[in-house]
Length: 195
Image 1 (cartoon, rainbow, N blue to C red):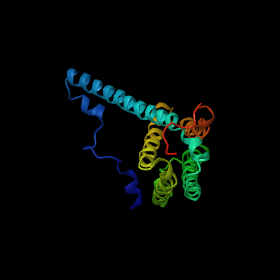
Image 2: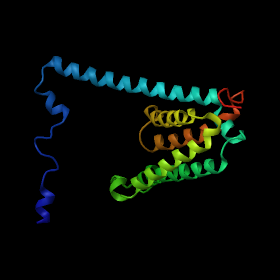
Image 3: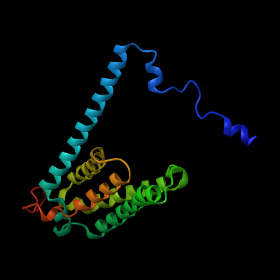
Image 4: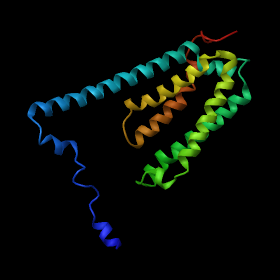
């Protein structure tokens, strides 16, 4: 019974790739699809560059990290809770992306190997968002929600410019940690916060 299952093909003939479909197309259609793929790739890069650029501008304009470390109105307990939850998620991502994939060589998707990881990380991410919203609200008010969203999108889209594989994963963590030290490089105390 199990031997027959192993000999069964992994895909059905109805599942065809783009290269198999291209044999039935005219030369013009093949060229058009090629250009559509290229233009989509360029559009993804442009969109990612806009998000990363907007995030960098936001960090500079608000001097975000100096304000969260030094401003007296920041809710410290909520800030520490947010950093704890974010650190937990970052450590799990490092475990899955670098340790399991690169060092142990586990090639199965980590969603199947560790099925409870996604719900745990999702709940932790929601707690992180809420804790940071409470911590930043006295300083930036409603803008604190936009600032968090901007960080999220900028961090995710920065992956468009990194190499794939373990080196890209390590560089992503370097970017995350390096962002915390930007407060030393910005010459002002932040231009967008309440006094």
